[in-house]
Image: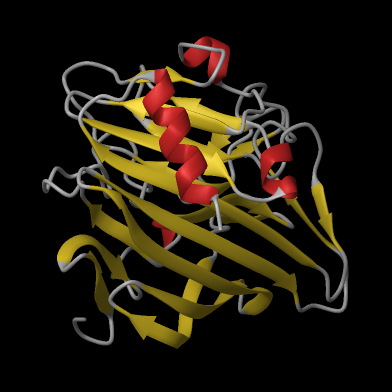
Length: 281
């Protein structure tokens, strides 16, 4: 453990991730708790924070570009018929408290606040576990509850008129290297084929590391994957792919993604086996 503002997650005594609860960032980056750096067991970093290409990408966390018109993703907001636009519409995720805090995981309460008003309350549960001598798993669950008296809806640039940009939800900004990472699922390969599809698992393989993302609940598996490889390496879920996601007053949206973090480049069979092992209770 570290200070009250961050903690270190460990697998078999090895540090594999640092969680920052109160990042000091400008408002336009939509400040939010996040994991960075996340590393393989051999110590290879597999996340980035505020890279030159997208300063609002913050390691591993939950980011949503449109919650009832408020930007919890950071950067410019996509406006229908105008395109990406600089607006003063950014929200912030505020760490409230840890309900549990151990070297192998935590349970955290957060408040999603915009324009002086709390819109969502989140419970975030994160756990790490070893899988093999060269791979471990990050189990990440978030529950978003509408605490307002009115219905809320979650959108994306895609639902606001930008095809192919249905990002919003769990998001992992991976390490950028000289060559773009490989992307594959059980039956598809390449960014063009994998982006926007539904698959039980998806792998992103860099020079000496592989990340395997697996939806661990029925609702999570229904969300299409958002994938970038050529422009930058990033993988996330799409809470609002084809239409806005409505959240009634008192209603809760729950998603769980388990990510295998492995040294080396995994084959399709190896990725499938580790994904299966990671999500098995």
